[in-house]
Amino acid sequence: MVIRKFQILIIFSIIFISCENDEDITCSLNGIEDTIIATSFFEWKYFIVTDSGFQEIDFMTDDEAQNSYDWDIAMMRNHFRTNSGLSGPANGGVYMFDETWDCSSFNQILDFSNDLTFTQDSILTNIYQLGNHENPDDAYTEDEGSHILENWGWFDIDNSYYFNYTHKKFIVKLPPEDDPRYIKLWPYQYYGDLGESAHISLIYDFIVPSE
Image (cartoon, rainbow, N blue to C red):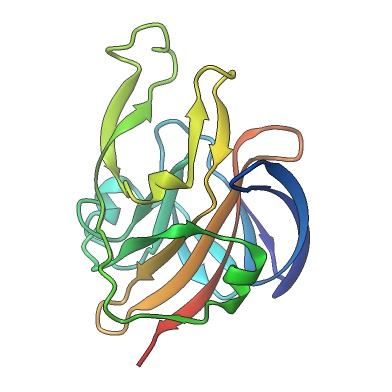
């Protein structure tokens, strides 16, 4: 299920992790906001990225995705896939900057250097297996995914496995291969309004390589 919020100018409160401390900031961001409910521990949801939200593709299997150019991004819990590398046949991928997003930097980035190298999907080794929590050898398994987008947050195992955010800057390359599309992406929330996990709120917008 995808909850779409068709807004170009949105106002919301987020927790921004600064260098010194956490502070609540009310931001006015220019972009497309969406909330993805990806609660399954073993089934990926596949999406087409549009100018009005992530459009879910019904009934696409992992085997079908391996040979399909018709999807852009997939999500499962806190994990992402791009149509690239071991996840799909397209020439997608992700670039991560050293800096973090804030309202100003997100709004100001309208293009990017055309010499960036986008990292394609490989193997993730941290796919949590529900029910095997007590056995460290079986608690995690492998699956295809974007290890670059894993950097959007992390679980604090000493604090009830709370998911923390890095607010790293990402640019994602999307199909088609002969005319690729690009989005700036900011996943900023892992929990829903009632504290439900894997209710991922994000904002993105289309950008272009500089000439």
